Image 1: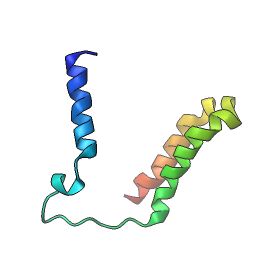
Image 2: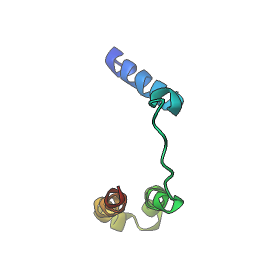
Image 3: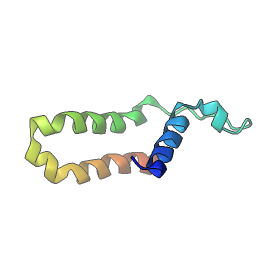
Length: 78
């Protein structure tokens, strides 16, 4: 593993483990998102985990369309 890759991975890990409040502005307030908007993300995770076992060839052909479609739902909301 090269030194630059190691530094990049350590930086990503430190950001992932840092508390969100340490990275946020003190005057910023989080806006609650309805739990229904998490559904496309959960559906994509389940599809990535299960579809290769259920119907591999269909999933290999249609993964970009499924991912784009679920992402477009959330992007349209925001």
